[in-house]
Image 1 (tube, rainbow, N blue to C red):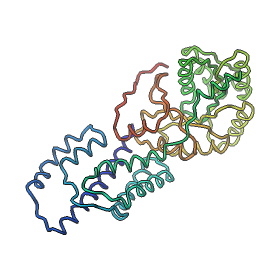
Image 2: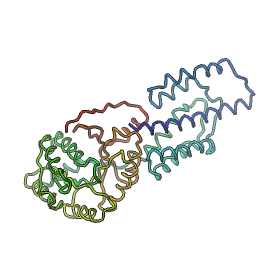
Image 3: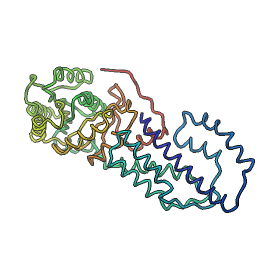
Image 4: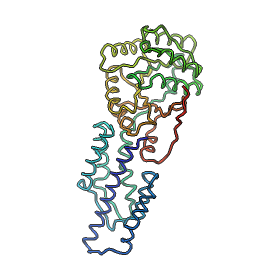
Length: 370
């Protein structure tokens, strides 16, 4: 997961770190015309050892190994923009290749510059940690958004005697129906009652797919015949939930491209008629910048409240995970990280950081329940 991002950030951080070390050493060498010592000769001999040891280790652990075989700076160093400009320009291009949105890349590069340029580093400072934190914070600044507390919304509506209505939107093949099933499973296990609305009346087999999930999970589906009006189906589900005092209505809709005006008018009608508490856009992490474009267009059309990002476990690039929330100004709510109903996890910036920098190796199941 996110292997490409890890590689790009690691390379840039290593180069920045080396610039700092060389700058400190160069100033000292120039002043004292220092000759190579026996200790310094040993450094070259240890390079191969470093290469072997670093395999399979986290981003920061590799820094620690490097530090044990490198000289420390001999005097205070002040980082100037020229020291890191070329490195950050290269990183900018590489992040774009990893499907990170341009505006996000620019924001991250600017954040690294602000944190490092003008910084004074003394011989006692931990160079690795300074560089690592600058890179990490540039990502956290992008990922940190105000969270939506779904359970708080459900409990508030429950006290008021009404269901919480969530409409799922997105393009074809992103995993809307499966994400609905996973969220239904999660909410049911937390003690909430759930009903599903088969609002995708267009795709062949969509209603049957939702019914199969509902049977496995143990919830009811409200449906009409194929080709029925999606808004009417979801409206019926809401009325059923009110009559039966069901906590949550999860409404499926047909996949559609944001450029299809007629289909976008239909989803606008769904939102207008059903007045959902939340509109969730379901995006496929593997589609990169296209997911970001589609999210922006859906947001303009119906107003997205949050995002579920699917297939994250198979995403080597990580561009969509980094970019999509920032691009539309809305939070990522959940990540799809596997095939089981349990494999829908709440989004956390720390999770992304840990996966990019290899700080935690989370195992994901390839087992399939549906």
